[in-house]
Length: 391
Image (tube, helix red, strand yellow):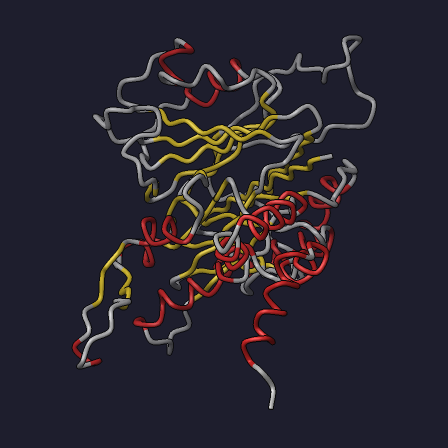
């Protein structure tokens, strides 16, 4: 007969006293399970931290609720997307449909009850629910709009999801050559002074910002805000659009007192080795061949694709209603950029312009030539795609 106590003791010795085996076993675990194992003992915690430091890649996924799917299962389905995430994110950028945002999720109670059918359910909005699924230090930034653009975790297909409850997201770990800063602007009280438009507590934002995501939930946003941002950050590409809601657990990211609601959320990307390009698909473009011609311009910028990600912001009048079939623009993007995740939304107005940096076009000081006239920023019935590459 096998002595179970000796067997367990031997297994415990192997898994705690032989780091090579411990590391091999724990390396097969996703981030959430790995963090749970890190709390077992000091040796496991040390090994888990080593493993996490080597996992520095992007993660992404999307979720769509089919018409025949039970709404009570929404929370469980979304939660399952986060259980198998391999890398620990420090930034979450998410896009959800307004139909998903407006209906609180039913979260089954974890407490056992005698009568299962009468078990109470918590109700949480999508923002607070997602926040619970992420590490406490993760910077949570999200919006809701009429539809979303997402990519499956294998990056072999992108989707333009209209008229369904849906969610897409990008999880960004700590990367050596990428810094991300967020700030909000109250469009009703701002001035053109830099300290006022960026708000208190934003002095840490570097001047070499390469891209700014611009999300506004007010249709009457003063257009000079975008141009002012481009003047303060002359190396930046400004892209985004008009959305239904800003989903931030904090009242206002710049306002520690929480005295005002933000109406404009900006996410700034910077880094010495960050490269950015963008293309505007104009309203008259209505065929796959024309979309391919625009995407080819983006491809010709020759940005490295190994560690890249892209955003697509399009008008609610495009998509299926414009082409007669779904996923035209996202499928063309996938054709040209098979490794790059694409996320975004269908909004009520687009912000951005075509920016196609060419190889070797730099000034004597080594910086990109920014002696450019300010482009037209605000559009309707268009699509803007922005590609970011961390070299």
